[in-house]
Image: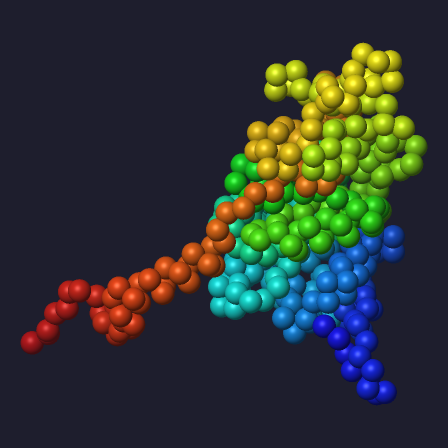
Length: 348
């Protein structure tokens, strides 16, 4: 998409062209600012038509997103963004739809909606901002908060076992499951583009720092002194290596992932797990790369990138094909007759 300035020369849209004149009402230092910037930059690079692009959100800090995008959008109700976005896609399947949600909005009151959205596989993008806290309502624990999390609503520590968003997505047979973070803008832009070009529902979990109520929740994965040993960046067809100067790798002992050293010659790259985005079983395993609850140290690095991607017919395509087939077989139909049903009575 291009604009035509006063001098008649055609110029491409820039990130700022997707920004509104609204004051951004997130706390200074919030990770949402970075996500907003990367989304605006990606839309400009993809030259998406602002009149054909829609942002739908629920309730929460992340759900203020549509106010700050100079596109169409709707700030809907708590947990129901999937229902609104689904209806919009079925009403106008040509729209580029981005659904914005958070770990509270999308995984608590909206958890059931999200599950059915993923299994239906409509063709749009879901950005799940995960900060492991309820930020908008001032710091209660959320569905992704860790056990023993002390918050205003759990002063003695949360007893709830946290939801694993990407494992949930795999269980719902999502066709695209990926993870990135606010503090890695280059990687985040890459994942946003991958999400956009996937045909089907693309779920991108984004680790987002809430510097007011849960500061540092993901610093182990973002800070220079620790990230080499705690993160692993997935590349299709490449071995799983990590660590400073790639001195560690992941191999499979049966179906059990193991961290192995690469510098002493015991193991080589040929011994390692090769990432395959289309491998369902390995995708499931990758969602389970989390801290060992028996220790205070991470026993497997956290994966970032596309964990799993596959192809499956989109819901809206199947729906319209079914409608066309029904009309071919039965004719256009009569709404009055449909409402009346097959049985009628005459009242004397």
